[in-house]
Length: 385
Image 1 (cartoon, rainbow, N blue to C red):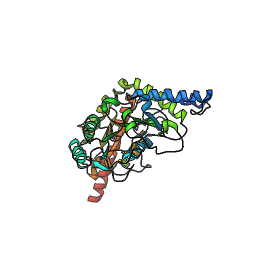
Image 2: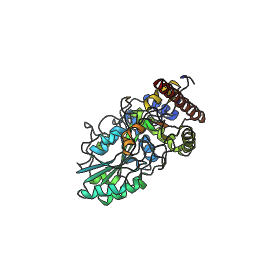
Image 3: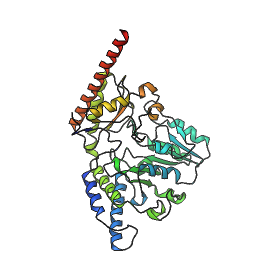
Image 4: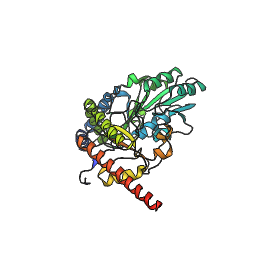
């Protein structure tokens, strides 16, 4: 297997740009005009932004007016947690993305069970400790490392009983499963373009209509009235246009995306039977495309390097740590030992993954594991001698 045509299995880090998004970006780059200008050129640019706003809103079942465009998912998460009147308590699940857990000091973590699902009883108890109406709860829809889905609607029911606001990081879930913003009952939702086949550097925060009136948003970026005063700065028109095109394509491809679940299961069944590999979050509902699995006795960094040499791209946990391979906070929160978690990699399929990719990955994984066993045996023999 050569590097000329690598097998890309790291779609949760970033997925391939969809042809529709690439075309939309190119067309938008040909438009000269600031979307805040009132002349014809400005109105043309504004139309691109608003068409994309419609598409992004439709992907998650929200109203277009509730969509605030940002520079990406990280900014959307920060705006969600930092943009509201100070909360006396901010509660986040222990498996949230770093852009949530690091957004504020003093965040209280909500524990999860062995499959990584948030503990609703613990959430209830934590909310009961504080003053009613003083908390913000942030729980993701799908975990970026394990694919485990959270019971966001149940979280919202518990939180709203205590007058708390609810934020949902849906960055990994969007485009991979049907999302109904209203049915989830969350107040805020974060999205990112490059996870659904759009360009990097653009995201969105969805804000439920009623809460904006009760708790006016304080923008994190100031200096202009863009995005209805919620996010200053001239809009990234080409990026936003690409986001909208990707959202339309992802929405139309949801049913087809579900097929990846069968391929993921094939990977897990084949590798688990071959080497006793453990799959994290196996007992919980998961995204169809994601598997976090161990290769017993082989560190994740070694696996990533060896698989890369074999022409297969995977990752060790989240891809947001400047290329560092460090122990996973997510797996630790799920009760994994440091030793076992150190052998876990994330395999994530995408909209353009093929069945041949799946087979090549499985073959490469088995080969890497076999080589590791041979080397381990050689070391043991040398030591015994």
